[in-house]
Image (cartoon, rainbow, N blue to C red):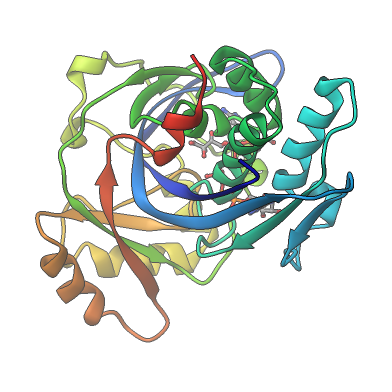
Length: 281
Ligand SMILES: C[C@](O)(CO)[C@H](O)COP(=O)(O)OP(=O)(O)OC[C@H]1O[C@@H](n2ccc(N)nc2=O)[C@H](O)[C@@H]1O
Ligand SMILES: Nc1ncnc2c1ncn2[C@@H]1O[C@H](COP(=O)(O)OP(=O)(O)OP(=O)(O)O)[C@@H](O)[C@H]1O
């Protein structure tokens, strides 16, 4: 096989508790990662020479900094011999800096797709650890299950969540994950909860209050969405906010009423990502 086309799905953090901070500065957290059936589309086609190309490039991200290219470089270094080149095509739908894991999911999809196309046959555990070195949110996309997560997001327990539709609003601002995690006002001492104790009612997103204060666009989006759903909440470090609905139609009816400055999308909950089938045990 010389060509693969894959969905790089988005995720939501149904809740996000920050329970502490490690000596290296990274934060210990508890979260429930919900995968969505909506994301970027990536295609990979092997080349006769050894070049790696990306079309189109992201205007805001230098080529070698793009997580897709960084993931490809990691595998090239490990192979220890020359590999065929690859043309990578990216159809970007996920907003950047949205807290829905676009860059992380792109990186995970690239690691798994090229492991397969380049016949490296690295096992799942190795891919997970390579992913974790590139970003805290990458392992969940490699493992490919909606999952409860602890540690810095790498200790994953697949978890069944209710089937539903999510309305995700994308406020017109970019939130820097690094800025939020390094902010002095961030809540960092939430008491750990047990998996079984999770219910949306007894949980929160510890970054939400701070991000709402720093970014009025996020605050406004949440105020608006809470008119339709008391469970409306922010994902990750923002900027996106979301609410769940029992049917696609209910979600569509709310999105149709959004003011012009608020765009968004509707996605169905996904228990497992299509990538899973390509990850060796
Ligand atoms: C907020 C979440 O999206 C929740 O799913 C993730 O924890 C963030 O994951 P991510 O975007 O993959 O984060 P990385 O690219 O690894 O790190 C971005 C920045 O956030 C900080 N960071 C990230 C994750 C974490 N558990 N603690 C942190 O303090 C890192 O110091 C870094 O400066
Ligand atoms: N392929 C990529 N897609 C998107 N962003 C990328 C990519 N490669 C590198 N980046 C960089 O990563 C940053 C975070 O992008 P991303 O879309 O993953 O944000 P996010 O959804 O907030 O992530 P997370 O929820 O994992 O914190 C971007 O601002 C961009 O500079």
